[in-house]
Length: 276
Image (cartoon, rainbow, N blue to C red; front, side, top):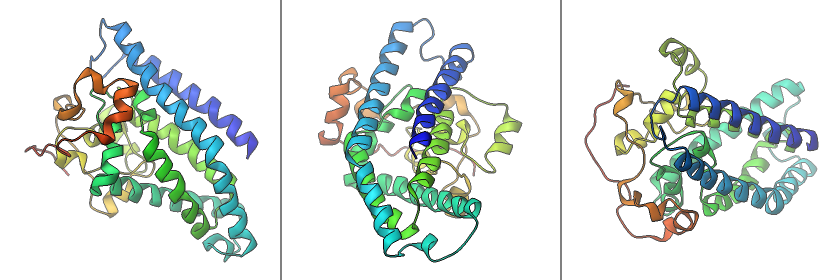
């Protein structure tokens, strides 16, 4: 577990640097062309928020996850404690079930008004790039971390299996948030299995019909199975962010912290065209 945690930090940093370079030389949207200072400020805010959330999780919630894993094992509760499979198969099942939960947790964040108040911090970024993968309100992180306790018990997962899932999932999350585009043929191939930039750009659209789609974080098939898969024919027409949070004061660290407690419309409903 400790070695996985060490590797996860380096993998996250390495993925971030590669995608930052890709965005610099071949950005899909010219958000920061000739605006280096604005890009640094934008990335710093998002990344700092991610660091704070990461420290909070490591110092405050890993102990609860370890308790859940140990208790589940001691009482033989949870699916993986009821079967005897090779380690590789158990890992695959654990990753699938963890990602299944992540899909539904994300979907609930869009459907339940109380949860959306926190999750809209993530969607209020009008210039989505790789650093947006770190932009989550600490309230959302607290809730998701607490709910992970019963999930771990029900699955019967080991802590190292959770760590493996987190490493792979976060690398993919950074990839599909990045301000990049892969060749269309490659995007089609990749999204048979995983989430691609084309899929996730649709999810961050201001149109509610788009925002309420493509919820999955790692495996793209959950959206197909549960009818939430969506694509847009004209990717350049997508506009990120939320209308009610465009003001600069809402993009600061303090503004993001206050976002869940601000009044205003939940999501502006507009008409839009897209293809399934």
